[in-house]
Amino acid sequence: MSAVAKLKRRELFRAGAAVGALAVLPAGLFGCATDATSVALGTVVDGGLAPRAFDTRGLSWLLAPREGRVEVRDADGTLVQSIDGLAYPAAIAIDASDRAWVVEIGTSTLACIDLERATTTRYGAGILRGARDVAIDVDGQVLVADLFAHQVVRFDDRGGFMASLGTPITGASADESVLNGPRGVALAHDGTVLVAEVGARRVTRLAPDGTWLETVASDFIAPRELRVAPSDGRFAVADTVRGDVTVYDARGALLATHRSARLPEAIAFARDGALWISGREHG
Image (cartoon, rainbow, N blue to C red):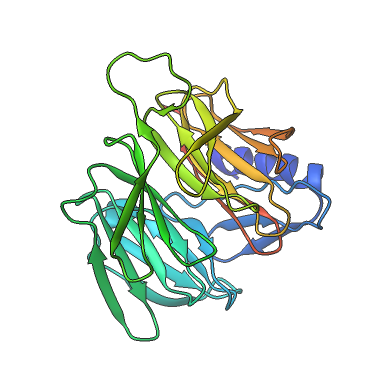
């Protein structure tokens, strides 16, 4: 067995031993089963694909940004469909109709993929400046973290622009209520909006109308992704520079920290509450 294989096995064992049984899918995808009270931590060791979202049909959606591809797989890991020709797909969210909303960093647009209708429709051209992450609220509206505009942009469920949320930073500012480099966005269970700000090195909470409410967690170096568990409102933050994933309860109390030999690049909560982590080697 190679040194790399040994390292991967040790890493998966540590994550699995801490939280329970290890679930394995084909194509190098790994995760940990969980119950409602445990904090699930798992690791994806496949270098090119990352499970980024799970729909109501039990399908997992995986992104291959460098290849411009999204793959849809069933519960056994079997490929259901591959969507190609995307401009560096880097983030995804699934709405109540199982449509996938994908952020294309290459064009700073939002692609809506409808498997049933076999369509891909793009929105946000000329509106989004630095789209980086996407989330869906309880009304089916689409929220996009715009890194360069320092705001969260809201679209309706048909891709129409609605509003920009948050006050963007201008110059050097010590005002805690402004947004500075929003890199991740997610919907909390209470309907508020959680934003991971790489410029401010924190996670902040906004009211649904964009009013700043509080700093929920801080002391990050580069909070890249933010995801909320559909089961209980826990949220996880991936810090790509510090090299860890931290898990908090719905109020922001720290539950667990996961560090490994791989830098976390993508995280996703499955509908059973398991947290999936994908990363790359250091260096």
